[in-house]
Amino acid sequence: MLKYWNNSEATREAIDPEGWMHTGDLAVMQQNGYVNIVGRTKDMISRGGEKIFPREVEDFLYTHPKVSDVQVIGVPSRKYGEEVMAWVKLKAGETATAQELQEYCKARIAYFMVPAYFKFTGSFPMTVTGKIQKFKMREISIKELGLRGAATIRTA
Picture 1 (cartoon, rainbow, N blue to C red):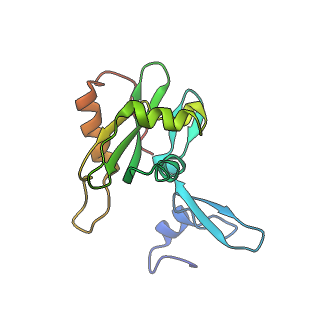
Picture 2 (picture 1 turned 90 degrees about the vertical axis):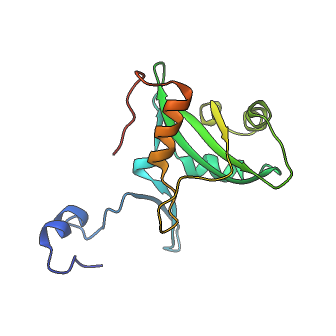
């Protein structure tokens, strides 16, 4: 993309002087020139100075044999700034506990990426076009966990 149609201000905000478009996506460019999207900057969780990309935790949790779908968000923490929380849909007929999933994670991923909280759900808040609304998940989680008054959540 070279520019926004008839919108030079939006072009200046999104495209830097070298011609790179800043979309908010986090990507890794491979040696062959292909780019893999690995997350979004606004979704990044900062836990005690560690930067955690929800997609990495989600991709790992998908390896659990009972997990059908998962979304990871950051929720406020007085101690760490943010903590990791996973909303989990289990496969039909399966049951699991937060402790079971935490143990699964602790044995295989970095300690700071292990979700402190789990919410088992049958659905995620969605837009009318089917996009998951992580900001609503945060609002619901903060209320359900009683985290009001804790550190604020980054929104950008």
